[in-house]
Structures are given as structure tokens and as C-alpha cells.
Image 1 (spheres, rainbow, N blue to C red):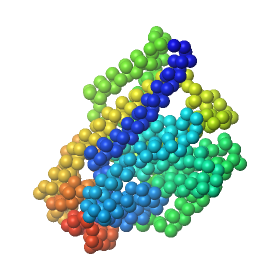
Image 2 (image 1 turned 120 degrees about the vertical axis):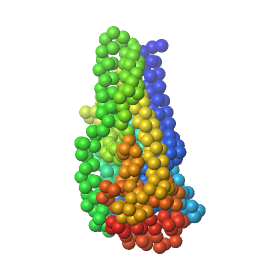
Image 3 (image 1 turned 45 degrees about the horizontal axis):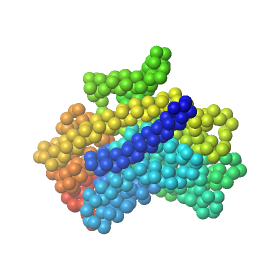
Image 4 (image 1 turned 180 degrees about the vertical axis):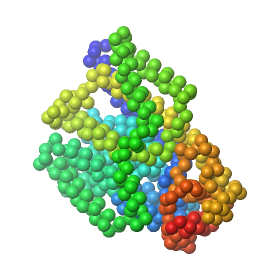
Length: 481
């Protein structure tokens, strides 16, 4: 086989590996989430409870009007299902499915819309899904949906027809993305930047830039018309100020990824001196063996509540993947960007060494993601069982404010990384199938989602969820707000 044939074979194999990995992860997200009730984890407990009692907008979403797309796509349809079936769990399961299926839907839509020769935007979506999404999988951050919407919106902005219908489609797509999360504005700016090489007077750039201006104005207006409650305003501001805090990245999995990828580079350079043809295989094998020994003998950490904070990597990483994919797509369309010609050529016609290096990165990262996901799901299963035992048991801690309250500190200390103090009460209601004998409370909790008025209004309304469970939540809310 000639060298060029080998290169083409390797490139085809890498593409197949990238696409297969992304599709497997996207399917696994849905299957694992539904099997292990991950829609109940972290803030998901509050969101699921809000769906079950048919009050998601009043409970929280009116405070975050900038994320209305997630409400319309995931929570409102689920809430409607509760109303139609009169079954709270039907809505909870629908919410979980709609939320966790978004990466798979994103890949399908991007594949259909992407008209670049070689479908490089779709390939970029696959890379981003495989490398970034597992880091936050399990925690219901709205950036999960923003990431999913980014890729089809990128494809629409590049390849929608140059008609009024195409312009309307671009505007609607950008509007939907903008209202997933405040960080999505960064993604929209990145999309417009990728269109600039087509020409600043070119149709795709002009319509996308114009739409972005209108979308930003609408986002500002939505904040003015629907401002958050006073209680939430300061909390949202604090959260926004810490989105790019470097301390976010000081978690075991990020360090493990950095050390592993750096070690591969060093090993590859050393082994190549003695076995150039098989250096990538030997280096990868040695590093995988080292990782196995690390996991068996040393590692005891669980990536759980830090999954929420790693959403910052999606805010940063998604535009980077998007720009690289767009450069490759532009190259395939015959557009060479000044100063990036070599990079474009490398993206569309990678060398054997580049192909093998990226394959190693993909395999190493996937191995780490699989193990970390397995550890998280296992720990979450134990934590959910512990909360269930407290919610259905007879232990009580009246000092928390009511004789029907029990402290979450009674759970095993090893499960502490799974705790998300502000949503534990809502989790305890649902894992007890809306018939808790005790409401589980974090004694150190200092953030309370519902005001007494909102919880009381919901308790008094006709809802599918049992009124006894809603009364527990009302008592808890009225003690604090």
C-alpha cells in the first residue's frame, strides 16, 4: 500500500472513530440518564419537582428569562404531559429524556444541514460532543442545551439559502440559541466570526451579524421586562462572576486529562526514537496500563457536583471546536483564510502523525470519561438510596424546624461529593414516590428556591402530585423565605 493510500485509510479510520464515538456517547447519555434517574441529580431535583407539581415557570424559570429556550424545549412539554396523564413521573421522565437527548438530536440536525464537502461542521460537532459533554453529563446545566444547539445553528448560518426564508431561519436559530444560557452569546459571536472570511459584505455574514444585533437587543429587553426576584438577583450575579474562576479547573479529572495527554506526548517522542513505526501504539498501551493501575490503586475521587462548574469548559471549548470546524469547512468550500492556510490544510488533509496523535487523544480522553462516568453513576445510585432511606424512615431532627425533617448529614460521609444542598428536600420527595415520611434537609443549607407565598400557592392548587408532599415543601419554604 502506498504512503498516500495509507494516509487516506488512516484519515478515514479516524473520521469513523470520531463519528462512532460521538454517536455512542449521545445514545449513552439518554440510556444511562434514564436508567439511573439522572434528571433528579443536582439542580435537576428542583427542576423535576417543578415539572411534577406543574409550576416550573413560577418556581424558577421566570427568574432566568435568558434561558427560556430550555424551558420551552424541555420543561414545558414535560409539564404538559403531567397535565394530560395526571402522572407526575410521566412528566419527570419526559423532562429527563428531552434534556439528555439534545446531543443526539444536535448531531442528526447538523449532519442534515451541513453542506460542506466532507461535512466538517458535523465532524466538529462529533469531536466536541465526545470530548466536552461527558465532563458535565449528569448535571442539568443549560449549557448542555446551548452546546447542542450551537452546531446546527452554525451550519444554518453558513448554509441556509440566501432568501428571506433563509434569513428568517438564521434569525430564529440564533434567537433559540441565545435564550439557552447567557454564555450562548459567546457562542453566537464565534459563529459570526467564522462567517467573516466569506466576506464582510457577503450575504451569510451580513444576515448573521444583523440577526445577532437584534438578538442581543431582545435579550436585554427580556431582562428588563422579566427581571429576577430580589432574592435571586444577587445569587445570579455571584454565579456569573465565578463562571471563569480558574479554581474551577482544579479538579482531579481535569488534572488527570492534562497529565495523561502530556505524558502521551513525552512517551511518543521518546519511543519514536527507537520504534518510529509503532511509537503511537506502544505509547498509548503504556499510558493505558498506567491509568488502569492508577484507578485500581490510587484514585478514590468522584466527579460529581463539580460537573456543574465544568460548564465553563463548554463555554470556552465549544467556540474553539466551532472555529476549527468552520475553517475546515471554508477550506473545503474553496475559501482560504489569510494567515490560516496551513491550519486549514492540516484540518482537511492531516498527516499520518497528526491523525495518530488525535486518535490517541480521543482514545485516552474517552477511557477517562468512561471510567469517571461509571464512578459517578455508581456513587449517585448509592446516594439516591441513602436519601430514599432517610425520606421513608422514622429518624427525625426537629432542631431543623419541624419534627418531620431529617438531616442529610445522616448519609455516609463518603457520599458527600454527591450532595447538592439546596435541592435535597425536593429529591427526598421524589425518591419517596411523593409519599415521604420525612423531608431530608441539609442543615448547612443557605439557599432556598421557593418563597412561602409561591410554595403555598402551589400547595393550594389542583395538581397531579399529592398535596401531602407539597405541604412538606410549603412548611420548609415558609421557615426560610
